[in-house]
Image (tube, rainbow, N blue to C red):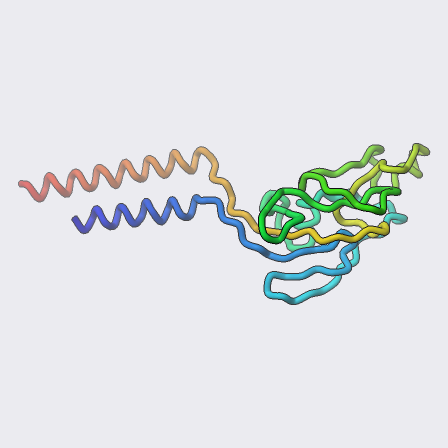
Length: 177
């Protein structure tokens, strides 16, 4: 009976580990003037200025740049209370800001935020970035998310549970003999 409790505990612990978890890590403004960490400390890391033709960042790209790691480790939201997978963006010539999906970014020329000047194309609304100094600032909230296990992880878990089941069966047979 004791072995059953150990196995049940292991299965429940593994299920809790595999469950998707989000942890609030902080927030950033689109212009980078205010970065707040979960512990309440703030700093600034001014976002690149539009005139320097920086890369265009999605909300997830900006989160990874600011808080470290890779974009797929994060969820970004315009709402601190619930994750809506949206981010605030500033667009070339659009100083009112807009909300788009947190993985969105627009670079019509493929040459950077101010690439329209290089390409000689119309600039207004040609690029949208979640991390740019270009006249608009609003707050994006960042959450660290648990990695979603690969199918191989589940297969390995099932093999392990099969071995545990065989061990329980051998234990029962040995106890009867």
